[in-house]
Length: 581
Image (cartoon, rainbow, N blue to C red; front, side):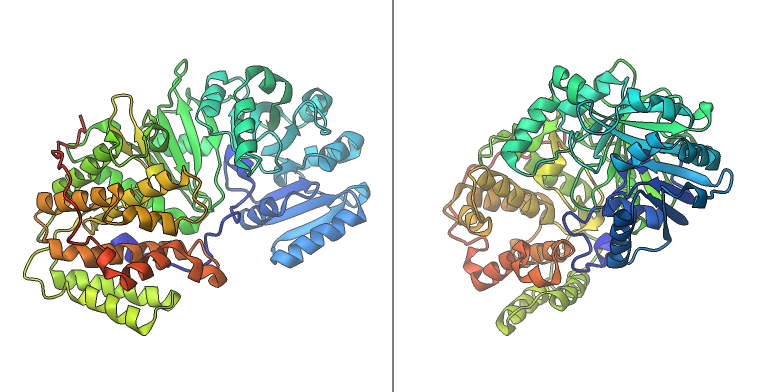
């Protein structure tokens, strides 16, 4: 049981915010397997770091001694390997073996201007490109200081066959989205679904940026463009990248004629790079392909692929979950293609009230999923207690508890061991927050992102976590400065959300015939489990500020707040089939 969780190392600080890998344009290349990369100009540190891990060697051409010193400081500070440098101005010292360069990067600004000013540099780089070599340049927007498409067109034509991309955000060094410039339907979809990436962190400014990104006139004047130039004309077809087509073809899926766009949003390295693949003349994607940013996270997509195949054996409507389409590995990275689910984000559709019918539909879905997949013979109470003790040992190795808190949680886990009842294991989503739920056009709920799925998971944990995220969505809409206090207030037995939690838990236990006395230990260990996951997003110095560890401490300190017997009764709505109709 909990095989995915037990196989995961929860190391503090390994998935920090804003430590996401750079060089998202790499995923546009025909292949991610490259030996040598040459960069004209110094790229951002995030890009430089990614390039140093991907290629066998990276050569950075600098325009001045100042740039050389800046590059040296970046390399030393971040301990980057396999990076060499040279001066652009000293062209006689630039010697590239013929056809030795796999990828040529032209950095916006100084890199592009250097290319324009030096015919000798262009000649050496062109001769150095391999027969399958690729050149990438960020052209900026027409009104930026970067050279325009027309200005660079003559130079770019020397390197091969260019393909132009609409790129986002409007003003940011790191690309977060790219769509071939001729695919206007895909561009419209990216703008409508906010897949373009945002430059500003401030919510008001992001709102303005999103509004402008959806205006055709603004896009025509200020859109950011990029160009990928391939040495071989056979590659310049506007089709999805060759490595993605190869993975799909190996699984019997042809995506050659599909329009597409790439989205690489997110501030965490665990966020996947996404390809949206469209049939021509349609406004809804047919497939979504997910790619890990680093091999260390391959297990998440591998686990999701297995989970979706298992779920498709159940009587679940196809629109409620993605359908697996293709899967494979390229350049050490996992790639999963799945059917696209059409709908609107749950957080945009819900009323954020405990009486919201969509919240109740999602609760029904989770209860029925548990009922469909429960296996009372898969383990004994002693087995469950044993696994929870393993997680507890990992927890106390990271977080601090007082002796009283340690004893209380130990006793709660131990209380499961001698129960005379069978506790069924269920298929657990693992991350059923409101951000992973869509509302389809038929008003059904659909759960996405099964990367943390546990085919033999704990009962009730998905329900607890989903309702917690509903409270988070509701309280944040009221601009609560700190989340823990509003959450506890909404979870109090006198609150409507508290009643919803109590009633939903009771129905879950009755449907799966689970003894109600296991609720408290499972409720506490649910937050212990979430605290372990949250540790990867916290630096060691900030562990004590973690939301889930403090939530757990509160419930240990105030045990009467965990489903008190005095919780007022509420109406019980019937639990329908998983269709949510």
